[in-house]
Amino acid sequence: QKEVEQNSGPLSVPEGAIASLNCTYSDRGSQSFFWYRQYSGKSPELIMFIYSNGDKEDGRFTAQLNKASQYVSLLIRDSQPSDSATYLCAVHSGGYQKVTFGIGTKLQVIP
Amino acid sequence: NAGVTQTPKFRILKIGQSMTLQCTQDMNHNYMYWYRQDPGMGLKLIYYSVGAGITDKGEVPNGYNVSRSTTEDFPLRLELAAPSQTSVYFCASSFPGQGLAVFQPQHFGDGTRLSIL
Image 1 (cartoon, each protein chain N blue to C red):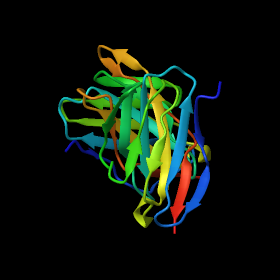
Image 2: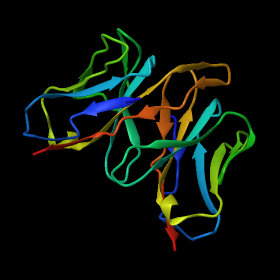
Image 3: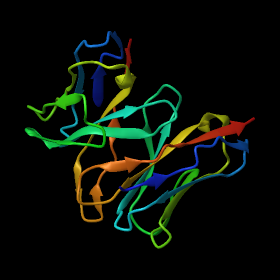
């Protein structure tokens, strides 16, 4: 069973701080990694995706991938109250056109 | 551009009733998915389809059926509703990539909130 692990939180950070969200996965063959943001009562929306080891930056968001250690993280710089949401990690392990989602980490940005 | 459209948005069913959750996408995506999300839980895959006429089971297929007669539509059928099927259902779609980016990000519908009493 391919597993994707996330701490459910809540993770509380003050406004303006860096929020660090982590995700580990069990399948060493995993190839594609996605972060989705989900506001309460809404559907998931894509924040970042990363395919190669290293960092990928998009505005205030940075995705970090370390395949050797089997973890992927999402950094949110200058956190805003509007970033308060649940962040879902999704991992594609190859072979089938489907992903496995973690349970999500709830982020609370305190004004 | 409508993207992925799900209907209905809300529904209350009685135990033993049946219904179909509709999902349609206008992005010409080959791949379509049905997930359910229970409170405090991640998304669990029910069924998926890689193209018209091709469907396959996900993690939690029991109690559900799907069909895919066109690229655009991927309805989910509940035959005998049970309280355990109370959940939020999301439909998603994506197009095939290649190489390292073989799996592309999914686009989600707004969800159907289903209660079975």
